[in-house]
Figure 1: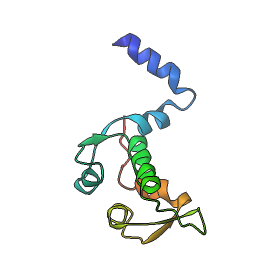
Figure 2: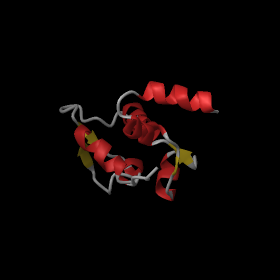
Figure 3: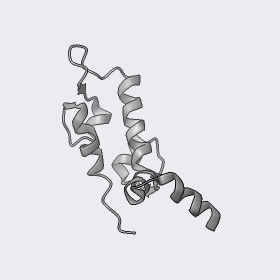
Length: 103
């Protein structure tokens, strides 16, 4: 186990706490569990990737402006009920569901 921890520290680079916060598993609140098909734990990074995959799979990017996402009902439930968001807003809106955990 100590060897695994050392290997993980080596791969994290210069900002180990910030990177670890992105990849550590956390318990998902109920509204995020519904979006994540019932998974009870997921890392913030994995959840963001799932949101992006949902956007691409359901063709939710605005055809006239690819920087905008038109939210369907499933996305609205996790993006504070917004009908349309900018791509730059996504990380911030998702981050609200993952409070900082001190380690």
